[in-house]
Each structure stands twice: as structure tokens, then as C-alpha cells.
Length: 115
Image 1 (cartoon, rainbow, N blue to C red):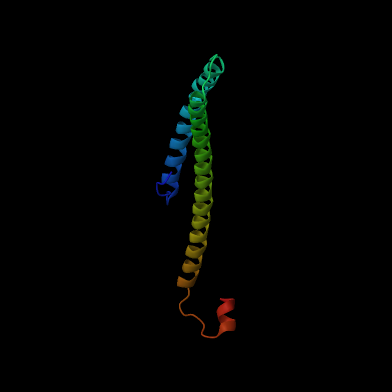
Image 2: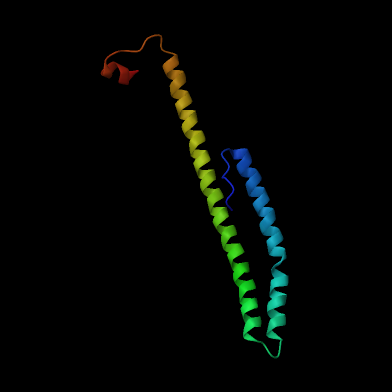
């Protein structure tokens, strides 16, 4: 998927839900793919062209699942990144509030570290 990755948790959740639905629908097509394989096996005189067409379908099927798996991994990475960003933002906010509570900041480094 070449769509831009989500930059907030709500959008990420929307993507996760949509992708789960996509994979569920894709899984629903598995019996059709298996049926095609079974039908092909029962053809008495298979040509190389027929075999090539079946291989193309099966390769595409595998590729779809691979891309789906890669997309899930991308979404997991985005989730980890967004969670980390939220945690860092909380820490920075806490430091900002602590710094804002001081009337004046010490000018030497030792006293500044104690503050």
C-alpha cells in the first residue's frame, strides 16, 4: 500500500480496522482459490499455457498475502512510534510545567541541575 501512514492514533485504528476487514474478506476467497487448484488438478490434458495461468493466479494470491503481512508490520511500527511520541510529549510537558513554576532560573550549572 502506497498510501501515507497515519500520523495519529485515531487514524491508525481506522486503518487497522479496515485492514482486518480486508483480510477477513480475503480469507473468504480462500475456498475459491482452492477450488481452482482442485479443478485444475482434474483437467486430463493440461497445457503449459494452462499451467502458467494457474501459476500466475497462485503467485498473485501469495503476493497479496505477503503485501498484507508487510502492511500489518508497517501499522505495528506506526503504533510503536505513535505510542513513543505520546510518552515523550507527556515527559516534555511535565518538564515544561516544572520549568514554568520557577520564578527565576539559577544561572550556574550546579544550581540549575538541582532545580
